[in-house]
Length: 83
Image (cartoon, rainbow, N blue to C red; front, top):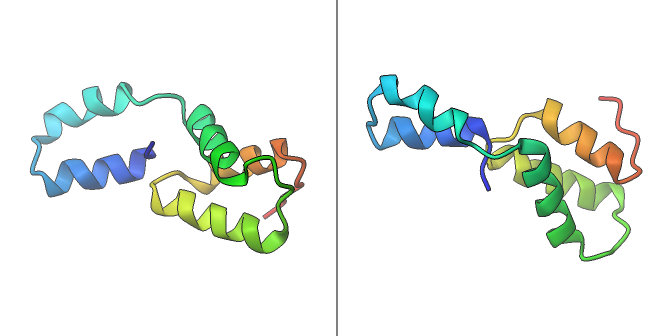
């Protein structure tokens, strides 16, 4: 899945009228669930190290998720992230 920022970018690139954006964005699935599924798929039961967490965080940011959504997901993995 993609986060709200990436969806906004796609709507802009496809020249979708702005009055339709709110409806489209309101139909997005819960970002926490999407991030958790992404992390579970990529980790495949492995315990992540800092380098892998950075790589996964960067991938999620590119997919349009915000750091404020990514950080709690990393904390749920048992990695206390303060930044």
